[in-house]
Length: 253
Ligand SMILES: [Zn+2]
Image (cartoon, rainbow, N blue to C red; front, side, top):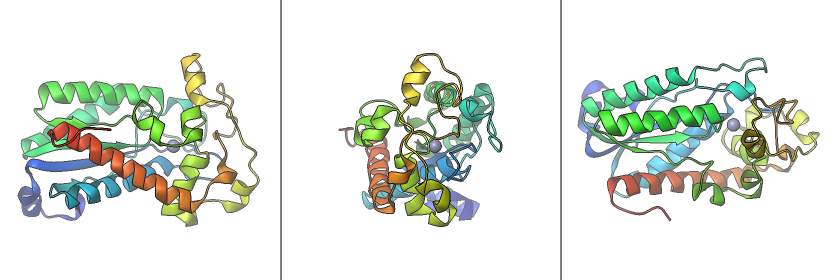
C-alpha cells in the first residue's frame, strides 16, 4: 500500500494494472459539534482507506491510496461556520474525472472510502458510480455505510441514525488524531438522541431543523479511543469486502 501522491509517475505506472486498486478517501470540510475539527470525515475516510488498503495488500493486490477529497456537498452543515459545501453536480463531475484518469492509466478498480453521510453527497456519489461504471470502464467499490448490510456493523448509535459527531465519529478521532479533540468541551456534552436519518426521511434539510443546534448528534461523552480503533478495523473490513466483491474474488457478508 502506497500513497499515490508520494510516488513518481514511473512508480505509479508500475503500480497500475487490472488487479490494482486505487483507494479514494472522501470526506467533507464541515461542522462536527463543539469538540471535533472540521476535517473529521476526512480523518475517518483516511483511516478506513489505510486499513482497507492494508487488508487488500495482504491478499496480494496492488493498492495505492489517493490524496483525500476534502470538499463535497454538505448542505446540512452549511449554516455552521467553516463548512464548505459544493453543488452535487460538482461532486459527481469531480469523481467521474478522477475515475477517468485512473482508468486511462490502467487501474482496475476505484474504491471509495467515504465517511460523510449528507444525503446530497450520497446522491452525488451514487450518480458518479453509475456514470463511471457506464462510461469509464473502471470497476467501482462504494460501500455506502448508511445502507445495509454495512450500517448493521457500525454500532447501536450509528444504527439509530444519531450518527454525526457522536460516539461513533468521536471515538475514531480519539484513536487517530487525539490532539484535535477538544476534551474540555466533549466531556460536558449532553447526549443528543435525535435521529438524523429519521429527520432526513421526514424532509428536514439542515442539522438545525434535525435537532442538532450545535452540529452534533449521539453521545460524544461516551467515546473512547479503544472503540475508535475497533471501528476503524471494521471500516477496513468493509472496504476490503466491497473491493473483493467488485473484483469477483469474494462476496460481501
Ligand atoms: Zn462526520
